[in-house]
Structures are given as C-alpha cells and as structure tokens.
Image (cartoon, rainbow, N blue to C red; front, side, top):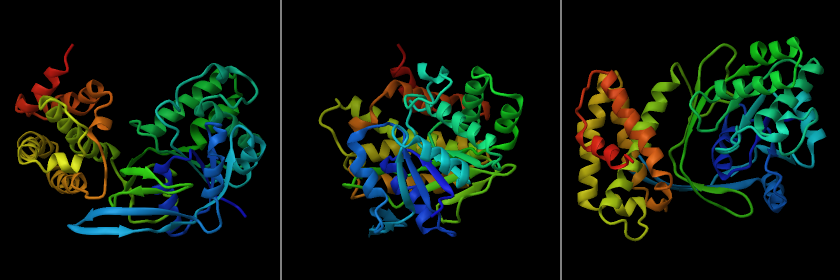
Amino acid sequence: MKTPVIQFGTSRFLQAHADLFLSEGSPARAITVVQTSGDASRSRRLAALAAPEGYPVRIRGLANGQAVDETPTVTSVKRCLSAATDWPEVVRIFVEEAEFVLSNTGDAGYQPRPEDGGKAYHPAMSYPAKLYHLLAARHAAGARPLVVMPMELVVDNGKVLKEAVLAVAAAQAGTPELLSYIEKDVVWACSLVDRIVSEPLEPAGAVAEPYALWAIQKGAGVVAPSTHPAIEMVDDLKETERLKLHILNLGHTVLVDIWRRQGGEGNPIVREFIARPEVHAELTAIYQEEVLPAFAALGQREAAERYMAVTLERFANPYLDHRLADIAQNHAQKIERRIAAFIELSRGAGQGDRQPRLARIVASAAP
C-alpha cells in the first residue's frame, strides 16, 4: 500500500473536508494521517480513522433551499501514525510515497518553539521545523520535489509556511543545495478552506454543513490532489478570501455585536438569533447597504451577491448548533480583521465613509 497524500493533523475539520473529498474525488487518494500533538488519549481516534470500513461524516443542512441529510463514508485514510512515537515511519512515507503534503495544525502550529533549534528531530518541534527535517530527508534521498498545501486559516498560508521552513533551515545551517531545494523546487501552494464542522462523531467522523470549499491558487507546479466539486483552482485567492472574511465572518461578528447590544443574555444559536425579525433586518441592511456596494467597487458584486445568499442559508441551517458565545471569543480582534480592515479596503476602492453601522461597531471596540 502506498499513500500519495500525507496529512498532518487529525481534526474533525479535516475528517469532514479534505479526507472526504479525497475519498470521493477522481482519482480517489489514499492518505497517511500523522498526529502532531502526541496526545496519547487520541489513540482510539487514530485507529478508527484508518479502519478498513471507513468512518462516517453526516452532512446536514440546507442547499439551494432544500434540506440535506446524508452520511457518506470516508475511506481515504489508510494509515495513521504519531509524530511522537512513529517518526521513522513518518520519514519513510514522506520520502518514498508522498506527492502531496496537507496540514491543519491549528493557530499555534506555525509558532516557533525552543526545540526547533535542535539538530535532531524532537516531537515538541513546531510544524515548520518538523517539515524542515522531513524535506531534508527527502532531499538527501534524491526524491523528487512534492506539493506542500497547508490548510491553516492563515493569509497566503503557502508563502507563510515556506518562509517559516526556510527560517528553520537557515538556523540549522542547511546546505545551499538544501535551501535551494526548499525554496525553488518544492511547490508551496496557497489555499483557503471553508466548511462549518459543528461536532465530532465518536470514535471518528463529524457532523458538517452541506457547503464546502477548498480553493487553491493556481501557480507554477500547483495541481489539485483530486477533482471534486468542492475543490476549485482559482486565479486570485484574495478574491475568495475577501468573500469569506468580509461576508461570512463579518456577518458572524455583526451578529455578536447585535447580541451584546441586546444585553448578551443566554447563549443563542445562530439560526434562532437570526430568525428574530429585528436581527435579520439589521444584518441584511448592512449587507445590502454597506457590504455589497464595496464589493461592487472591487468588481465582485455578482460573486458577493451569490455568496451572501449562500451565507444567509448557512446561518439558517436547522441542524447546526453554532452558538454566538463561541463566535464571540476574541471579539475585538475579529472586529479589527473582519470589519475595520473591510472599511479600509472599501475606502481604497473609493467608497469613502459609507458604512456608518460597521464604523459604529469598530468604534465600540476601541480601547
């Protein structure tokens, strides 16, 4: 058995996103999943992910106004390993089998750690340091370059990961040949992922909404690992990022602001909160009067209208228990990135000061 895809991370998001698409896609791809955390308590999950019968993903929600409730079985994961206990086998697979490298290592995955400076591999190293050691082993073996496709929610994630790996390589005094291999031969793809995965299934699997997107920016050597309706090759990933950040994510933050202004009582679910007439009216007014004109000025009005309609349908998902208290975490930072940045983007597109409601939300978060 050979697995052309090696994946770092075992999250329920990956289970209901990339792993599902590569199970259903053409060609179907076999995956080795590597647990990066070293959490021994998750050993049951690792075994279940690679079970021969596969694991379930329950898709529940609305799509084009129709209710969806289906449970496909994911069979792409063929092998699960731990970076803490199975490192020699991880290296072998990376060198001998891998063609694509996927990752979703969480917000802290790219952060440097003290162990990164060690010459020998250590399980506590950051993901970029682990990847450096793997690429060094692949280069030493004379294996051809591969496609690295991070899926962390980091703008320009491929470029950011490449620079982080090169920083480790420089600190490790890697040879000029190795540095050139990492910088010029390995393909670093930028991608954006979008799907709400609301809860895990035990011992493996997840519940997810019907909407799903894996957008990959075109570039030299960049190829999708499989053909699937949710996988899109795009010319400009920033256009896709703007839609997600300044419609879906902005909408979530607007809802939190409304909830807080109303007293912040209870812990309402998004679908129930947006069903309140005054809430729905305020959010749609912001979308229509303050968001869509800015996207029109950016040349994306039609795409924004379509994405707004899909977003409102996602918010109304009758099966998704997405709570405002969860969305409200790090609220001030989210206002800065999702709303304040959008106002600046709009001004740059010639929209001036035409977003009074959004400006009030930004002002409310000022220290």
